[in-house]
Length: 231
Image 1 (cartoon, rainbow, N blue to C red):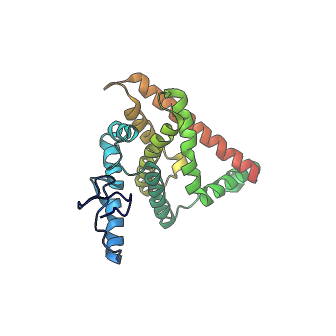
Image 2 (cartoon, helix red, strand yellow):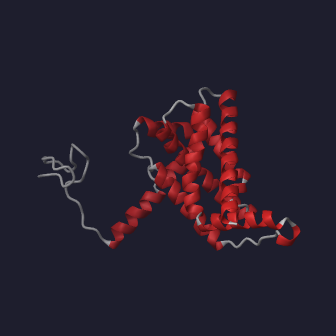
Image 3 (cartoon, rainbow, N blue to C red):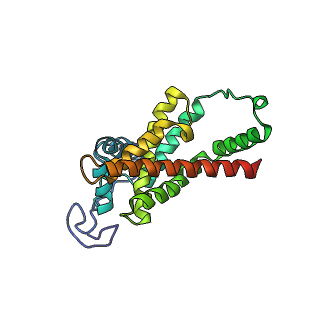
């Protein structure tokens, strides 16, 4: 028989060249649902696999991915997008009342803040996906080691997991991602665990703090500029 995926001729249940099944079952509603759910909930591969290992062993999962051991690891960009999507769903369900009055502060400052906040609300998903660009600039500057594309992959893991941490804390504190300290603590911790060279690496810790601080400063500058341009 000929493999439907790579056209390799064989007589096994699985293609020895690419691993595709010899007999591919027809698509049904059940298969769509079960395969989609498995991608999210499977602890041996998929989304929750990433969550588990980024909690327990960030260095291991990130380095495995960079070295090419990727079969069980959920794509980091997809991981980031799904984590952010879950956050947006929860954010839409929870109404947070603003407690700042525009009459109590400078109208210009209020206008800048209002427009920046409005922009963030409208384009939150794109803002945080693009934020890995700035985080990768920070980690590349302070750690070097990998090329920029690899830093983007690393920080997709970091940001995806940190958004999930931000989600849990958001439910309790009602703090949005930009000013949620738990998000930045998570970024520092995962970055440190990923880049440390030994069990206790003070240099890597301070580099992690520095890169996260630089990242936060970049975000604030971008948000302020957006507010100024839109006000």
